[in-house]
Image (cartoon, rainbow, N blue to C red; front, side, top):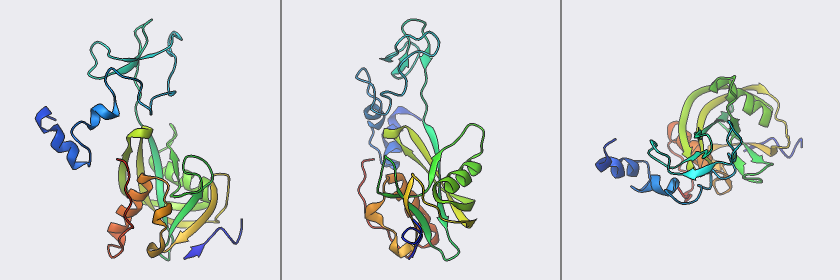
Length: 222
């Protein structure tokens, strides 16, 4: 294992079956978005006031909508909230090592993850992959195949993971990365992985590139 850190600081009847195929129960939608109850945890604090008139928004049933939403009782504006896209990479060296960083900020401070961040409005997903990897590790990568697309309902994000070949740069620590290491596939620190989406992405990459290696089992709340 190489180290970069220590040396340089459809139909309703079929809904349950469809959701089960994604590892979620038939009532997954109702538990993710409570009907008539409080604001979902992932939505709390995201939007508070109407962008049109400044009135405080309320969460609940709205005529013509098939689910509870944030709305303005004053002007009738509906504040639609959609998941944000996070673009990540699995940087791979010429030696077949996977580069991970130990996060220096929350969430997941002190835990391992692959580089990534939110897509900006003026860039492609490939450009975001290159930028985020460079910002967080100092490495230049060339994005390749898409490893997977993963949902985190509790965070209201969709995570896109690229396989990315390391083609240049110098590993560089920064406030977001306490440590940067290149791990052989056999030495990936599974118990220390920060996010279930990181775990899933690295696992799926291994299934393609190193099917002889089986990741340590982790149980996540899906």
